[in-house]
Image 1: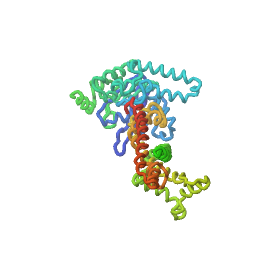
Image 2: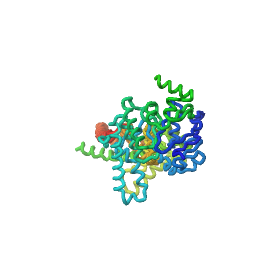
Image 3: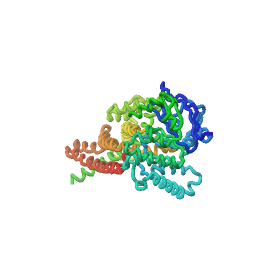
Image 4: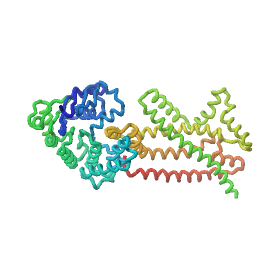
Length: 261
Length: 238
């Protein structure tokens, strides 16, 4: 049984049908890249999986636990939706760090708020917060920003901000980490540092889904590549199958446009 | 000697000016926040009337609105504007206190109601602009981190809103200081009214100009305080 199972996801905005039945699955520890031109629906798919959009039809489950079923989504309480979305982490294209908080505070904010809901919080508040901070320092170190713990987002480069955003998502121990074009808002010379962090995560068997325009990177890091076009998955397979031996004409056309660019 | 007594008299009026200012500020900010949320509501039976209300209040002169609040309750009650309920309060209070001068608390209430509603409408538009200017991405980042709606608003969005609205709010607050002078339309003895009374009873015009010093000092202090707030929030960009 696959780790993440996505079945038959449909989504429309008004009259525009953006997702027309998306099915895919992946195993634990795998990296899946989703490629495709703008408007192909890949970001919408990611947003549906993170409950930022509510899909019109379909289901998805992690580890055999159904997180979303369009049939009874309305029956879920806010608390249940919150619980379900915490299985996933999402890194945004434009980082979305909280500007008024330092690097450390950005990472600790959500874990600390969650800790307050724990039954034993009152008795062990100090210890719990110290643990959260210790973990945050470790994450900051992992993304190579130890010197910037107390800096504010406005004092960081785009690449540094994105690394903080990755650490912030990891602080909640997501089972799967999603990336929505994590390097698209960055200068070309800064994309390398983000891709390096993602590669390190892949080596540590983090399960990840990456929407990206970096074909070279997708080929290097992914176990599976999905090519989307017009709201459907046109082709999926290993990087070799999709990039080197694409079967579909649409895939070939898309890739040749990239190679020529 | 004359200068000192006149300063003292004017200070008394200025006390009422300050009282109107402070009370309007304290009450109009929460009411403005409520109006802001109503005008952003997805439910049109809440949103549309709020928008129309804000349009009316912002569209008529504050002085006219003071008269409306002052006269309308009595007119609606028995169609007789001469039996003004706010004046009645003042009369009863004066008699009860055995005072020689007519007390002003009843009319002050009328002015306060007008000011609070008027300023709440202006504030609400500033708040709405501030809240809507925070990018959707900030909310989404909070949600994917498992925060509740209220956590996102209070822990993530609010401080960014405050930072953005401080300059516009400062402007409105300074305008409010000077708008308090409109209270003399229904004879509240605020500082301008005091000075005008001196002009008519003692044929002195300079106290009227002298009131500017009080306003300037007050606005000066406010400017310093508001600049400090702005500076305190300048450590981040939003």
